[in-house]
Image (cartoon, rainbow, N blue to C red; front, side):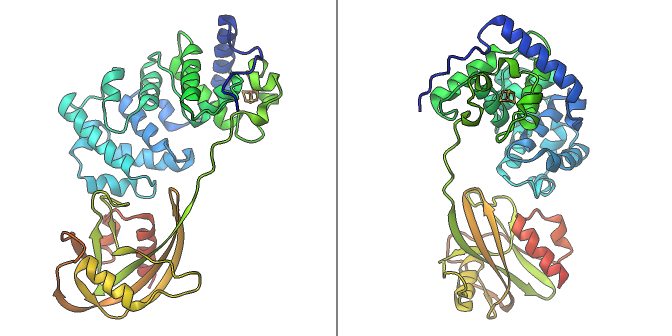
Length: 375
Ligand code: SF4
């Protein structure tokens, strides 16, 4: 498909862009959702909301953001915390790399900016986990700096407004959309304008069946004027999902359970988990041999366990993986421990079910912990 724009009249003239800003801001003033991070201009608090909102729905983020701000009211408090506690507060939001980068950025703010969130684009963008979108969003929303933004909602809105029929994820598409995002910024109320664009994408200009009849900027929408709303933006390439089969083992000993700390480079790095490993896919309905589970547990932890029994099977998705997780339970067979055979010794702890509530666990690790607690 061509990456050229359609020739429909859109937002090319300055007068049209002024009208766009006026109409969009008036609509936003009237219909904006009352979200807690919209009540503050504290750059730190806005930063936390922006990181949490990446890949996560607004309704899910609200209670996490509120709890996080109570515990860590500023960058200095976050920098002083143990990673363990940051991850525990993040538990359930997923994409834990965001939390680790947030923590690393807070430590950088404490070391380089005396604990105050920086206020220039270059300084903000130099922080771990902050790219062009996030820096622009924080500084336009919190300090009304004249910076553009481009994320999933605005990609859709700007593609349609400008009648862009190419692939928005391509280099040419990104260049075109960032240029539009910059060109349409008003002189004042930039933060409100950027939020209004995102709000329009979330509430009106939705991926399927956008509500063009009630859209405040329909008169200057290129896609609508050339009857191409259902073709713009070009749909993303379909994600290829990959199936994985894994096993996790609840090992008991004198009322305590064996947990291991996931290491850097592992999927749940920084979190705690029941011993877990990938196994060959035995096909649907086939049972993994207890002997395989015992030997893999010994390789991973160094502990010998009694023949395990199946506790539950959990199906879940992580990024492009569709995982079937077989959860086993067993008991420690002997107190003696050999060195794990799959590399360096890994930190292991024996925890009571009550102590598990204080440790950050993977989502499925928490599900297993609940199953165990119910027993
Ligand atoms: Fe989106 Fe329709 Fe508004 Fe165009 S007119 S911006 S397609 S909701």
